[in-house]
Length: 136
Image (cartoon, rainbow, N blue to C red; front, side, top):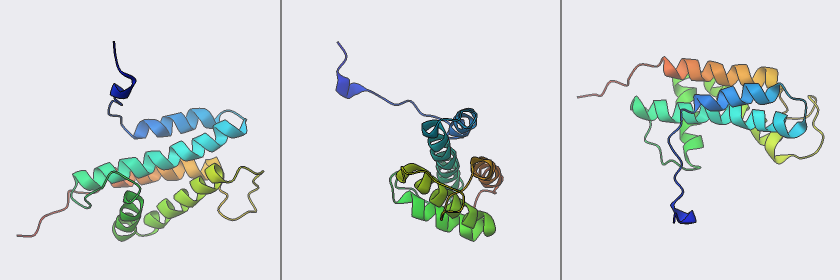
């Protein structure tokens, strides 16, 4: 008999969250649209965290503290794209935490037609970063 405590989450490719976001964005119900914003952000964030660590730009904690490190690293490495990552997180926060009707005129409300391509752009640019050369 398997214990409920022994559940294991297999490793994933964070880019799969972006595919989920695209599929969810095709629906019109609020829960799916908000989940699409969440999935798009986490796709870009988790991919960036993992690639930046793999390429020796950051040492992640694999917890909430990584948001700050990823954001800072992206601003340093990619300039305006790093700022887009921050705006992407703010858009995700608004979509997920605010359960009221949201309109584009409200602060930090971004449409999925900005959120999803921005997440894809961040993933592409972070993937193309070179491995950080170590000083000797």
